[in-house]
Amino acid sequence: MPPIVFTQLNYLLTHSPHSIKVEQMWSGSKNPGLLDRFTLAIPFCLDYIKWDVIYNAQFPLLAPDIVFGPEDEKFRPYNAGGEGDLKPKNSLSDWNCKDPTRLLSLILELRSLYMAYQKKRVGEVDDERLKFEINTIYSREGIEMYMTSGVDKPEEVKLAVPLLEMDLNKMVAGSTWRHQQKIYLQVIYPVSRKYLAMASAPRLKLVSSPELKAFFSIDEFRLPSWLEGMCMAEYLPTLEEMLESQIRDAISSIEVRRKFITALAIPFGRPVESDPVFCRKATFLACSGVFTFLVHISLPIQFPRQQPALMLQSSQHFHSHPGNAPIKSAILQDYPWSPRWDVVEMAERIFDYLVEECLNFKKYCNEVLVQQR
Image (cartoon, rainbow, N blue to C red):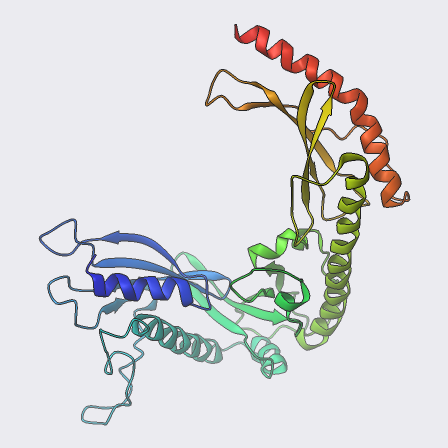
């Protein structure tokens, strides 16, 4: 890849506010090893739009061409105005190959124009119910819309509605998330050309940034019911109130897990390794006579309602193949547990259980070694 192109692409991937991915790279020059074209997968409306970025390896100082998907052939962001009209400056007309930020600026500018293009398409749909719904939530910031249509596709309008004004990145102490964490409500309306006195509920789904699953299970959140005759403006406040309450509970449970890991250090000693942010796992070094082993403890998001999963790993017994991996136990969860115990008693009960279980594990390790001979 030409150095100028590499610098711009690298800057885009490391500084974009969106999680843009490179899907494929290829060469358009006589030298097949000189990669000057690539496909970007750009997050939009809880999905990805894919654009090809075409540089010319022979003339890398020139601005790239951007090729949009076949479904967006009418999207022509810089073709506004008639012939001879003065056209405003844009990221392509003002290209500077020496500026590493230019490719990112171009893609963000095009994404913003694409967002406006899709809003315009949705606004032109002849569906009174859909127009009413969008008008009731139009003042909310950050809503993205997408119109799907085609020969083999039903006409639908997809909305990505950002929820909550909470800064989740700041609420989780010590988080190292590079991108701003968000929760969205995906709303899908089928387009209807006829007036329906009692329209059906839209399809609803809660979607979050993947990283949020480390402390909040979006899949276990139950959406409130959509009542007959309800509109989106009535639905969203109830949803956000429920969601905010559960988010705050999830953040509080991080501290509960932290106290439990601290309590484990009383019988086990200081952990060899632990998760300092979400407090979802900890590893301790233990021994029974001369037999030393690691105790891996995984805490579920629903702790203490759900008990931790335990796994033992020998420090002295190894598989002969592959790679001489240490011998480990199965996941252990069949031990005394009550969510009503205080964290000190929870830790003591686990320790007492492992005093006996580690003998079974040592026997298992020895049997594995015999089988490998």
